[in-house]
Image (cartoon, rainbow over all chains, first blue to last red; front, side):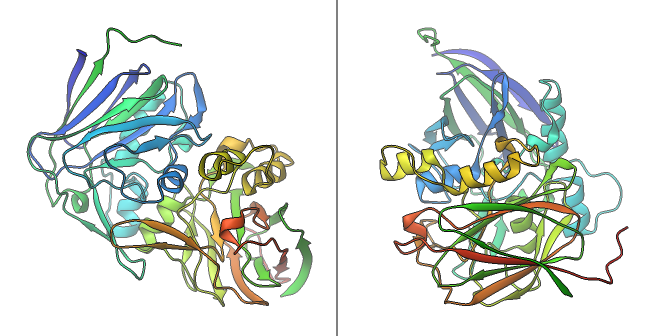
Length: 204
Length: 204
């Protein structure tokens, strides 16, 4: 592996990037308790998008970790989790959005949001916002009790914890440093990421 | 309310239809233990689609029932549940598909699926299959244990049980009689539905 990209996403913002099949995305929480929403499409094919529903069905579990696959809506592997220091991420909830802050928290005026940040990132690739579905919410802790009630709790990530995901197809991706107070234990922090590319990679 | 449509969906098939704002969709399981996948778009606006992730977030629970709202991806109410005899439906899993039968059950050859039946129904409205996300899987019983493991169990619906959903915007909808052995306790049955329209309805 040779490092090809190393970026810091400032608090409450986002970043788009490309991955080739075989590249590894490492997402690190540099300060701890910060969520990062990930969404992705097959490069050149916005109809092929990350699918929470397919991934949960194929894994038969809602909490994905090392060895698990994140699937596309057309049932092809998009990512495989290679390493996971935290072992708790969310794949149930859509990215926080302006409307979410208004509906759940009665917020007035503009609020930065993961949805806006993902939409702006994917706009640079010509992908419309409506194609952004439920994101893989890295480090986000969402508990489900036996009655099905959902609770958003502070992330379990500590400073320096990371997750690594290998791209299983050529991808356009976007990643955020989450903007929601409730998801990050009340403060906003940056997110670091790197895309590690294999020099021996053969594109098919 | 005056009844405007009464249909039987044969086993392992689907049906598309329109609803006006204020209409009520009644879905009945005529024989018991049969799942029916529902998906919907705003009429004339395929970018506005049913959203599992928004609905779970706004309800703070994964099992929706009487009084709960099914939201669109742009955070507008699409349906309100008015009546629910069964009180257990799934909103985590994507519709069963050809690929799902091959990946999870190693099925060879064509298998009827909810995804194919929804896609065929929405094609008549000019909506591409890739816009079909996680469906509201009426009567489908999916349990989540504290470790996040997901189990598909026989539906709790008995013969004659129904759910009623009021349309909160003008909609194009599709509904199936589910094709998956595992979701329907091993046999396939029909699904009945009616769209009840209010003669006093005022379209805005």
